[in-house]
Image: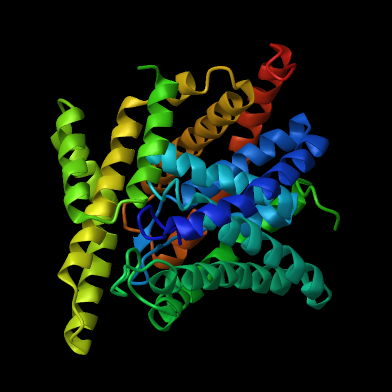
Length: 216
Length: 183
């Protein structure tokens, strides 16, 4: 669900960078406090898995692309802060190694998918786990994907108002929320279901192998 | 120009392009990038096109249809939008081709380490997936059903994950024993 370069204005990505930068610092401190050899190896493998999943992209009418994210899995195994940092690294690698996604859109993508998506997954999982682990993981991951998609749809949909020329014509993304919200949410409802199934599979495996770094 | 300087120049150029709103300037920028990128510019253009063409087509066709329906079509915006996204993609494809990230990150051992580990792990996962797919195919002469494919896919993913974690643990211990984490 990345936003590529050129679709969002500096009036959007610069404030997003200002918000994301201190969050990256907090996440980095949390990672340094917990990082051991075992965690490092699991974190790099699951980060690489997220990178692999996010390279299989399908362009969507809303101006982004559809693909599995993997941030829900990272958040459930390592916690939301580390998931945010790891997914930001995935986005950075995609931008500078693969040339996909975008470096200017990185803070927006990281905040939406890594931060909002990760925290939504973890908080919902904590709230729903008394109804059973399987349904809790599936619902939490699906909602995490949808919340990130909704935020990106709103960011894109607000572009015609945020950045326009003197005559009122848009300078970046041209469609409003009436187009972007359904265009992103409908396909991501399906993508989120696939991601929920995949996450559940790997999460159960991670539990059996005692890879979970978060309590429970 | 050093690799770090190239990386910084790319960052400045990308941000600069988002501040330009004149199609003529963006067109000139596109021409300059094509001229300056030297031999292989055709491959570079194809690579950039492959990355953004689907998105550009979807958005441009959508804009044309909505403009036709509402009688509010602005060709200048369409040109500006397409030129900007294409120029940004071309700049990024050029950077990916000509910047060695390991060299650009010299002096930042932490960043270099993360880059190497994650790229290495991604390569391991890709190779394992290819190997397991070949193994599944080799076990049967008839094509697998959808259910068999899903089951094989799940088994493949978990086995590949185990193997990747094992490889990664060995790699981490090797790096630790050579003092890679001492700084």
